[in-house]
Length: 311
Image (cartoon, rainbow, N blue to C red; front, side):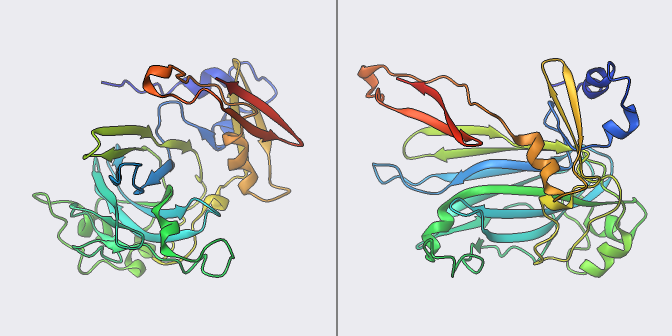
């Protein structure tokens, strides 16, 4: 059982006498407990391994709050971060939504056994990914490109219990009563500012190969506490540029750096919370398991490359 530490950010800011605590807390930041208004799932794949066994990607999102929410679920391919599918998902209070990304004959699709409301509805046989956003970018227009990428989930709004939307989408005996009549127009009418409290995880599983790899979603908290950002299904918004205010808090080495990005692109506030100048991890070079012993991983930092490790 995880006990969420809700005082972490306040403690980090306690020594910053020149910065008002209220303004800092309203800035976008990486939540160390994995709770937030935005979840970024770093990698999905349905590609096959050398033995020809295909992976499935299992995804979940949890609403830990006592209010119904609407979130934008967006899948992006891995070459140029072009969208391959999005839809609006409605979560009951304390709800868990699950889905799977699976291989199709020429690409990938998302399927779900979950009864939570979505706009548009996800067909029982799954919703295939599409190539509309990258068909002319010159980096491979085939649907094969949809087989790997990443996922964003962005909270758009929360709903009062007595609102029509909350009543429509809240599970009763395991099934929301109003999915068939719920509309974007009604959601826009009922929408209130998001409050966060989402967390999620993703598993890459290959049943025939007997392997599974788990990832926690990266959570951005205080992404937008100024207004509801409900957008109709099928629109490119909201996206990570809808951060408001355009201010970031980065906590490192026991101190916090608060930066105002309002004079430029607002998405810079999100970029600031995610940037690193090095990657440090473990790797195995044991010859008996055929590990690769001749590799170097590098990543750019401005105009130079930093060696991460060699084996």
